[in-house]
Image (cartoon, rainbow, N blue to C red; front, side, top):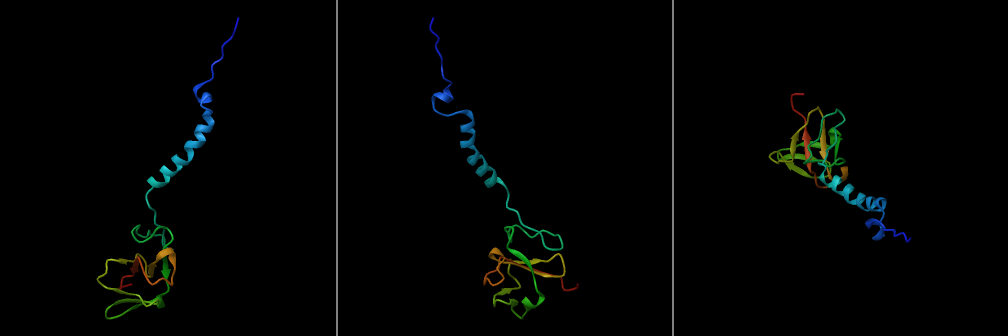
Length: 121
């Protein structure tokens, strides 16, 4: 009597079930990462920066001396002038200015947003 043994399809192809799972893991992880919404981070007082201004590391509370009100707009210490009518100007939810620049680099000449406190504070 002769016994015939059959290899499973996965083993016949040279792949075990565990190996197939390991091959799928990077694709699943990438899909989960790409489907997650962009997250902003919080100001020191706990309110959330807008996701259009911040990718999680771009915004910071600016020293009061870094922002001056001029006739034409807000003059930043880097020389950048943001006109009062610019859509990048947002209302600060505390008594401080907050700047949002690429990578949070305070020396950058371009701001994503400028959070401005209310004048009556």
